Length: 500
Image (cartoon, rainbow, N blue to C red; front, side, top):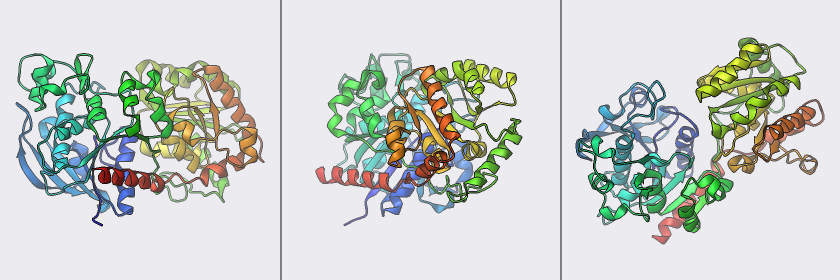
């Protein structure tokens, strides 16, 4: 049997470029697939951080893809440490910019994101239609930034092509663009049919059964409609996105494709997130030496100016400060949480109003609350290692990785029952405590008082020295590695190829 070949097309991948969980998945899943004997490779744009970290050689030059868009080069190299091959799109006018993959330094969306990621999608589809030396069996696309690839692939004239898989990491971001797109191709503003033709897609693709979305074009809808299979990042989220509450207008399409939709739970990188070997934390520890975890808490408290209070649990939170992450539920009860005898340490950025409100609390109670705006990989590891509890009150959470990181570090997650949080955290009910399956504390509703009650339940357990170590042990011994998930993906890929 020949080796299974997979191209993983993505807009970010750790450690080259990362804004969230997609970056972690884009590194870890291909790594896990290769461990199973799959020839998995990566395709991503040539942002400055990518170009600076890799040694690359040119494999194709002057690839002219769209009108008035600079030709790009296709480069090839290996991920840091030689983990696996990576292809990089070199287009300086598109990607060589200060700021992030999607936004400038001030947090504004790049105005030409549609073109930047249409180029990524087009190159991915060219791989899928076997126009380059590496000819994948599976083109695995991720989120709206690669959503046009299945459409390009579906309309290609290739005699042989890859099967396409579209993975949804967050339905809230759909890549919706209107007639203004024409101006990015050097044309005057025109109707959407003209825009579709500028992309090289047929007029018929701009329809309800295609990429049309309320008179505009949706990159994500294109991927969901034209891909051979759809996956998302947890079984519960696969059900959630077929409902009005979480489908963001595409629930009908997803429901009609429910027989071609799988929820496969993300894993975590158990080498990068391991308290025994973690190079970012002050004191390494294991399940047999949990007392050393307290040294991390003592050092972090000193670093952040928090009171050294052994009887107070430290509640950690690392998150985007957005409505989705449930910060609106947290802010009103922060005084109650502190009154209960809990310290709060938070790392994140996002909505400016939420940032300001949290910073005000930190200024009022600097010995009990620490708020660090931005993202810091080292500090994130230190917070997870030092905290006793980790809070994720998300209104929706496709998968979530941080709750799995926290359990691996003996830090008890407190979560709302939604998406991947529901699939990974087992509530500390009496029955679950007795059968030794409990790993955290779960609340149901989008309600600040329920969040507070969840913290109060956890606080009672924290002061029971017979119970708390058992909860830590349950989480630390659970297997959250990518091995199981990668096997599920391989089985899916093989089913698609057999059907084809």
